[in-house]
Image 1 (cartoon, helix red, strand yellow):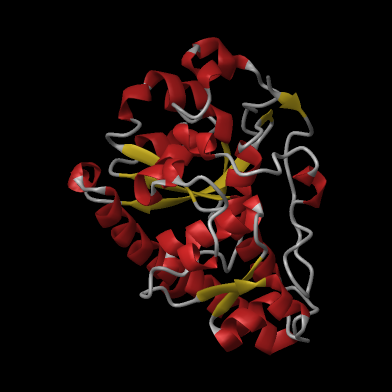
Image 2 (spheres, rainbow, N blue to C red):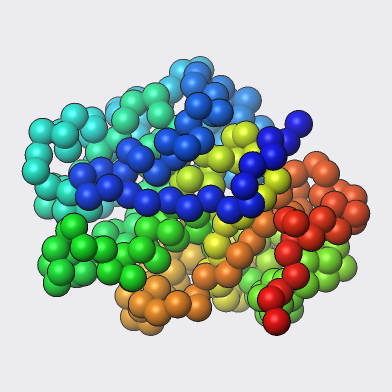
Amino acid sequence: MLDIRPKSAHFATSGKKNTTTTRRFAQHLPQEWSSDAFLRPPFSWLDDLYALCCIKTWPDFNWLNADASLPVRFVSQQMLDEQTLCYESFIHTYEQVPTRPQNWHDLFNALIWKQFPRSKSALNRLHMTDINAVGSNQRTPRRNRITHFDECGVLLIYSTDEIPNLLKQHEWHGAFVDRRSDWGTRVQALVFGHANYEMLLKPYLGLTGKWLGIQVPKDYFSWDNKQQLAYVDEKLLERLEQQNCLGERGALWPLPLLGVPGWWPDNEQAAFYANQNYFMPKRK
């Protein structure tokens, strides 16, 4: 059964570390490891990549650091606590990501690093550009948008632009019902924000991410997962650094996560999308 909570979730990170981002939700989330969580979409995508359903207990640092090609290593949160550096500066200085053990939020963050290492590194560089300009205590508008995307972002992968255009106009029925067969063949939603994954462990009506579009070739949907990820990571890197897409408002669009086909059983019924408190019409 769905929890009914406020329509949108807002996240803020402290200057020291990102331990406050999900405090509001932590008490509602499962505290123990459950491999069964990865049986259903969108978590099954992670299982396809990392066989998480076969893991009987929390992944440890040896598991997280098994891929030597990653630009960072995952280390204990205590290493950050012993420093005067802020979270982003610590990552930039040591090429290490402070990670709390047996913690869903930080595990999902590590899994995003493993999927999109170049783009996550780019976000860190963008943070550091603004930190070097104004200091770590004063957050620039771009840093706020970076954090929002890092926590709540969804990558909308598309080969034709019909569904992205419908979503921008909040034409939910058209995007999710009329063109339902396009999902998985012409369009795909990939979770980028690790807080999205955490909250989807116990979803609630109102759970909304912010999508950023990545256009791909038509044959993309016939590629294997790793080839898809490598391509998307490269294109997202271009959008972040060359196009500075988070430099100004307007690149991120709302996406009701429980409306994505396959992500919630109730959306098999077209009537699910009639709830305008969740699938809100576009403001005029």
